[in-house]
View 1: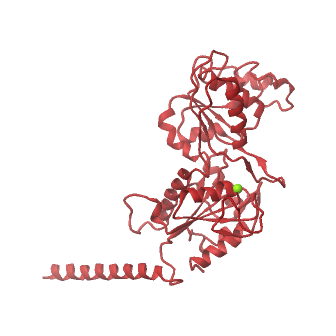
View 2 (view 1 turned 180 degrees about the vertical axis):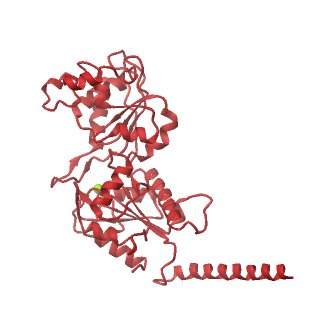
View 3 (view 1 turned 90 degrees about the vertical axis):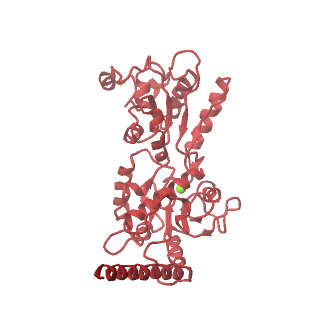
Length: 383
Ligand SMILES: [Mg+2]
C-alpha cells in the first residue's frame, strides 16, 4: 500500500512538473512574459569590424559581451564567435578574447574559418599535408589531429632555390639562406623529396604571397612533388573566401578570397586543367549549421539538467542572431542559411551605409555591437 501511495505521489509530482513545463512553454509565446530558464535564442558574433579592429575593442564590445553573463560571471545567454579569421588554435584565441573583453570565453565559443578542418582528419590523418598562412598554421592542424603537417615556411625551406626572389627579401627568418635556420633544418622531419603532399590547407591569410603562389603552383601542378613533372592536383582547401575584411587600417584589406583569385588565375594560366578547391567560412551555409550545433552544445553545458536532445538540429533555437559588419559574408550567410538565423548589421566595419545593404539586406541595422545587444535583449525580454 505504502509503495502504491509513494508511486501515486511520484506520478502526481511528475504531472505537476509537466503542467509547469507546459505553462512555461505557453508563457514563452506571450510577449515579454517571465524569461524562460533555458534561453530559446543564441547569438553569433563576427570578430573583425564588430568586436575588434586589429586588437582594439570597438563599438562598446566589452560591455556588450559582459551583458551576456550573470553577476557571478557565469554565462547567461549562449553565444559564440563565428569568424572567418584564425591562424592560432581556438584555445589561444579564447584566452586572447577573454583578456581583451574581460570575461571568461571558452575555446568551444570560438569558431574559426579553419575549425571545420577537424572533420577532415580521418581522410588525411597519416598523409603529408602543407598548412598555409599567418600565425601557427601547422600547430592548428596538429591540434586537430593531422599527424604529418608542415607549414609552407618549413616546407619551402627544404627546396633550395624554390623561391628565386628570397635573396631580395629583407626578412630572413625561415628563408633558406638564413644560416641559423639552415643548421636547424638540414634534415626535414619527413622525406619531402620522395613523399608527395596529399593535401594543402590554407589556414589563415598567407604572408608571403609571391613565394606562396609559386610554391602552391609547384605542389598543386606536380601531384605534390615540386620540381617533378605534371601530376594530379592534390585537394586544396581554403578556410574562408573573403575578398576584403576590416582590419586596423581605415579602408578594407585584401583577404583570403583575393589570394584564392590570384592563385586560381595563375594556376589556370600555367596548367591545362582548372584549379579545384573547397572553400569554407561564411557565407557557406554549412558554417552556420555547424555553429548552430555548437551553440546547442553550449546550452547543454549551461543547463545540464535540461531535457536531453537525441539529435542536435538547427531548430533547437527559435532565433540565432548573427551580428556582423560584412553584408556579403555575414548577412549573405544568414540569407543562405535561413531560419532560425536572423541578421544584425553593424556600422563599425565594412558596412558604413545609412540605411541597409541593397544587395544583402539585414533584418536589423544598428551602429554598434552594443546597440545590437540592446535590441536583442529587449526583443527577447531579457533585462
Ligand atoms: Mg567582419
